[in-house]
Image (cartoon, rainbow, N blue to C red):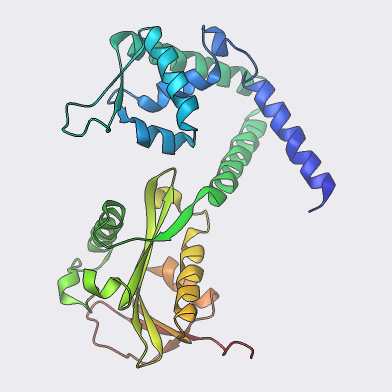
Length: 300
């Protein structure tokens, strides 16, 4: 990679950390560093499991434990087993003092943001906010993980449920998966098929499934969904490419799919990814378009 590009990224990091006060042990003029303040904010008013907090912040368990102990010592946080039967499931919650501190940090954060925006013209503010949004998207994209999960995994259940709910709202007359071509749990487990789930900071944000048909030489793509909050990160294309790679690894050289005319974004994605429209190959009642993509045999 170009060394000047790396140098510019490092300069940007230095400027940002200094501008937001990350170098100060008393972040926002409070008696705690940025790390502790961020933990308070992530715990929120409803609390959070410690393991989920660790995954969300991508912190070493030892370091997170030290942050929580410091906040406990200040009377801002309590960590307990949540009253459950499994003592290993620990939950962090804010005390009344912790809630008050979080509210004060929010107030001061608003003030700090205002000091950045105030000297700028309206046009400069729009440019800055747009640039920040773009940077956020570009930084989040590499943090997305895609893995094969069992259809009964909670993350898989969440994605498929959200997929069904979204289609029910977008299709004319709603959507009932029981009426369409099946994609049941048994069909989405190896060797019959696979279900790929994307996560960001340990939260499920997308999925795609493949039904594998070695006898027919093709894979049938189903259950393609991306959380609306993370659209624009290129995840749909990544999921599609990952599914194609899994199909090819299974020795299949064709991927087929059908889709509804209301899913204009998906149709555009499939066409741009090299899928061609073909005659209907099944009787899916919700489909208006059928697509197929063929891969060349790997070089011998």
